[in-house]
Image (cartoon, rainbow, N blue to C red; front, side, top):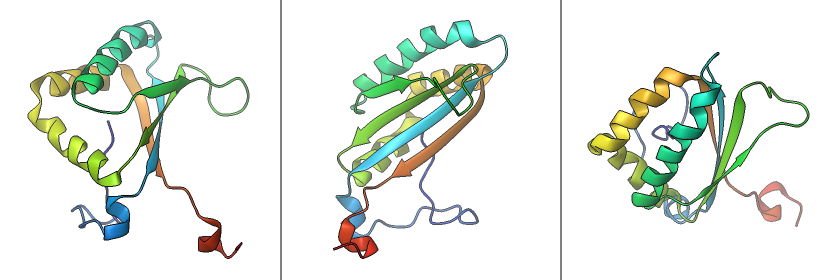
Length: 131
């Protein structure tokens, strides 16, 4: 579900990873709003997604919903921790070659209204002048 990484919004081709990025741990946060009338289908398709990701070596994900703020109506947030940005990109690049994943993605698109993905890295105190 994570798109290919690009350096900025106008760039469409992936840039090579730097040595630091290759081993960088990242957190992926996905905010998914299900289309009206499709909420009941969320559990079934998420079960399929969990099975596919486990089979393909993705890290487990935690599922959250809003109790305050945000857009809580028919919205779930998924959080996963990756030990390597390079590993994440490698697995994401393999998705199109997996017929099961492509079938899943077609079904996903039918029930999801919006899907926002953020990839975060921890900021060290030295990086922002706090050290």
